[in-house]
Length: 185
View (cartoon, rainbow, N blue to C red):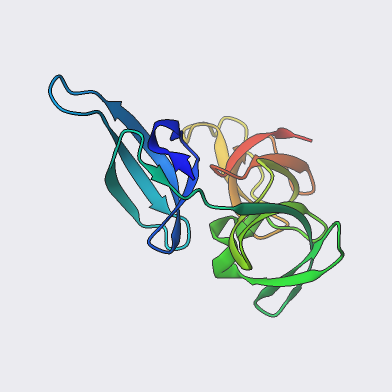
């Protein structure tokens, strides 16, 4: 159990049979009446966001989430197979379970898999990955009217905007949170 006074951004709680993550919180102490905590909660399974108010000191069950380090071993059709690095058990996850960042997933990459009981809630990729540029147009000197960047396709099939001097075959570092180019590797 966790008190509403202990809510912080990122804390996971159980409400109505689902796992909710605190996105925003605000402790309010009105001049008249008792204090309360106004929160914005995101359902981890469905992604829906709701606003909910709790009385100050109200206790709610804290979600018992387990974070396991797993390695992506191979892709089997539309299923991605991961191996637990401690027990060597394999688990198959669909593209929907992994989310939009699947475009940066490479074989052999270690990720954090967050589970609630036996249910996989999300897959956390590293914040940055090193990928090889497989296709990009050659940069033309003086062609900076577009801000000095061009699209490039990396080895996983994702498209990233890169500077004009990047050419095919180079390895670049990409931020998986916002799809941005971080530098050469």
